[in-house]
Image (cartoon, rainbow, N blue to C red; front, side):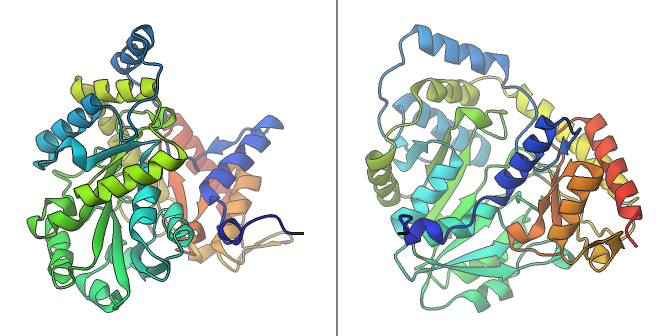
Length: 397
C-alpha cells in the first residue's frame, strides 16, 4: 500500500541539497571534494548579532512570539524598507517566518487556488515550481537564455499571460544566474502588468545586498503595482545568517493576514532568539554587509576570469548573488573511457567523480545544458576547483 500522499509524491527533491549531500558523503569517505553546490555565504554571523542573541537568552526571550513576529522586529524591517528602498510599510504588512523560503511558500499557498497559473522566468531557483505544485497551481515557465542575460522581456511576459494567470514570480539578483533587472527592464514589465490587475507580483529580493552594480531596483518601487506586490527578503544572505532561519514577507495587509493565519496553523512564530538577532542585524551597523559584498565581488571577478580558460564554456558576467551559470553544451557528446556525456547532468556527475568538485545541474533550474557553481567559498578553493574542472574537462574527447 502506498502511504505517501499524491501531494508529496509529485514533488521533486531539491537538487541543490541532493548534490550537497553527495559531496558530504564523498568527504566522509576521505575524498577531497570542493563543494560549489551550496548556496550560502561562507562567512560567520557578525559578532554584534551573536551578542544580541546571547542577550536575548539572558533576558528570557524563550517563550512563544506572536505568529507574525515580534513587533520590534517588524518595526525594524519597516525601518529597513524605508531607509534602503524608500518603501513605506507598517508592521501589520509584515510577517516573519522560518526563513524566506517559508514565506515564499506561505504567500503562494495563501493566494493560489488549484488551476491558477504562476508565471516563472527561468532559469529559476529549484523550489519555485515545486511550491506552485504544492498549492496545486500551474507553473508557467518563461525561458530566457544566456543570449538575453537570462532576463525575460515585456513581449515574453505578455505572451505568457492567460485568463488563468494569477501571479508572476521575480528574483533579482537571480539564483542561479546572478542577473539583475535594470530599472528600464522592470519598467517594461510593469507596463505589461498594469494592463492585468488580477496578477499578484511576488518578488524574491533575498540577494539584494550581494550586488556589483550601482543600485539594485525592485519591482516593488513602482507605485502602480504597490497594492499587489509582495516582497520576500531575510537575513540569511546579507548577514551570513542562513542557519538562524529568519525571513519575511512585506505586502498588502489582506495577504499578510492570510499568511499569518496559515503560518499560525503549522509553525506559529519563528525562533524567539533568532528574531532578536535579526532585529539587531537590521538596526545595527551595516559595514559587515559591505565587507562581505566586496569579498563576493572579488570572487566573482576571479571565477569569471578562470572560467574563460575552460574551452567550450559560455558565461555571462553575474551582476549579483554568488553563482556562475555557464552554458556547457560543448561537452555533450564527448567521452572519457567508457563514460559518455549525454547531458549537463552527466557532465556535473563526471566533474564530481573525476575532478572532485560538486556543482549543480542546470536542469534543476529548468535550464538543461547549463550548470551552477557557487563562489561563496575562499579564493583558494575557487582557484583549485577551477583548475580541477579545466583539467578534467580536457580529458573529454
